[in-house]
Image 1 (cartoon, rainbow, N blue to C red):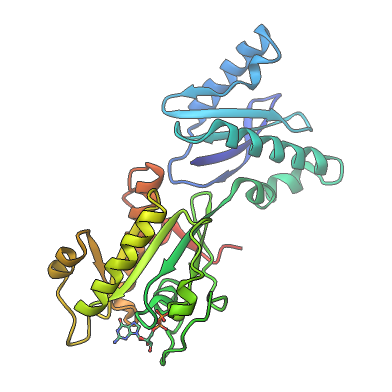
Image 2 (image 1 turned 90 degrees about the vertical axis):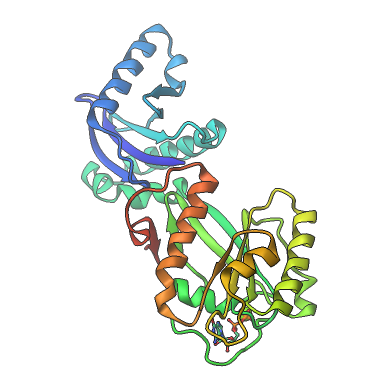
Length: 295
Ligand SMILES: Nc1nc2c(ncn2[C@@H]2O[C@H](COP(=O)(O)OP(=O)(O)O)[C@@H](O)[C@H]2O)c(=O)[nH]1
Ligand SMILES: [Mg+2]
């Protein structure tokens, strides 16, 4: 996880702009300690100063980026160094490129917009399940847009509701696949980081969904799958504990057409993502962690 990207003025060692991606901010003291260690390393050798440095439980990377400035990436300890190095090199290149054209104050003011495209990554969730169980409705619930009143089966892939959700430095993309049999053959999880398996809450559909889950797990053993049991409002819905037993995993029950369920859905998404990235779930509202339709 990339927590922050900071622009530092080399002469006075102060940060002049930053773009923050997580609620854990880098303190001024930590940044100072990093800059001191960087100066020490630079004295020893030019090459050493590009080595990432750990301060407390944060990892610091930096590059010169023109205009007597330094760009600093602050990450957690799990983030792949190669990945960060690729990104910080690109960010430094972008900044050096515009240094001649734009004023320092322009760069300061527009800093997040300048570095965001280099810092953010895509996180793909494939949403699958039988036709008519509520996959498209779940997207509407997430995005707070009115759900479809009648069922228009999604063919292949729904490109009308394109959720635009930012979590930390990730752009969450949800692929809403069609559920009809001819579409099922085209489900492709090769680009997915996670899967949502949506079922309704009838025994019949849960059993079918369990079969789908087994198939997906066999083909993609490492893909995390979260199961949703939708349509809890209907009279033939099994209750949540029975659903967990049938499916053999924890299932999130839901009424995708009822806005009251949105908070729980957001919380669950935050939990899943934090778990995936090895983050502690912060004690703040999911709305503050998931940014919808970021510019
Ligand atoms: N009663 C009820 N109807 C729902 C719920 N979720 C979706 N629906 C309805 O079920 C139908 C199919 O939903 P849709 O999201 O298009 O299913 P998809 O084929 O899985 O994408 C639509 O008419 C929705 O309004 C729910 O939780 N309760
Ligand atoms: Mg659909």
